[in-house]
Image (tube, rainbow, N blue to C red; front, side):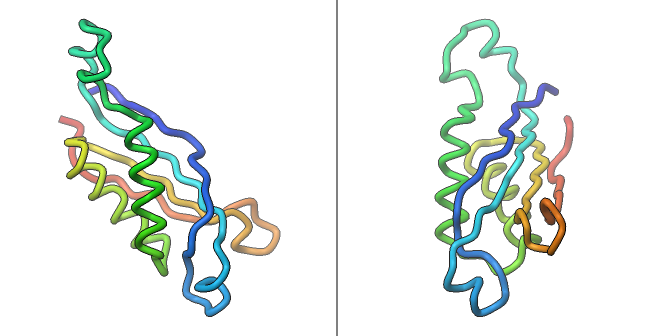
Length: 118
């Protein structure tokens, strides 16, 4: 199986459990690795046969902003399930991070993997 990547998708959203986090948007950083059979797209060079990573990225951003998750664990799991369902992706790895959430760290977060490699 081939892999389509989206690296370092960054945007501000409401996320967190503390009262101040529910008021102040924070930056999140998301990486996606999505299993995809690229053979049809390679043959046709037609976007209709490819996994449209721009559309996936936009949908992930909109989805996360709409949900206002409390935990990164829930956010990563929900993103993985949504992408698999809406874009017919059979396998996905999602890295969901909150930069600077812990003092003296660049970032903290989780990685979830869902589906099968085929």
